[in-house]
Image 1 (tube, rainbow, N blue to C red):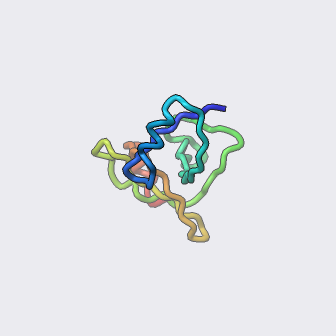
Image 2 (image 1 turned 120 degrees about the vertical axis):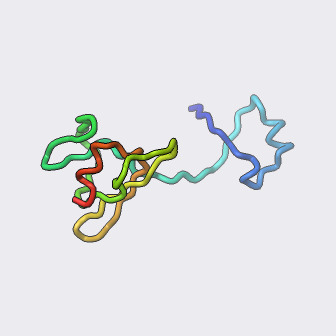
Length: 106
């Protein structure tokens, strides 16, 4: 299997000369990846608010939405949070849309 990666060589302790010699060659390396939840849909009173993108088999979190007080005004993602009844918070990087403001804190 072939996978393409973008690598910031300044952010890691990498022998850049050896890396330069590997251009066009097969190489193996280990890496760590952080899994970030992806917001697909928000439902309020069992009705989809965003795109009606209900997909079977995905994880679902139910709770109170926060962080959607106002529309995202920049080109950077905002952060919305769903807090379940036990107090567990799930954060989602997302551009806040106008439709998300009314259910905020609900």
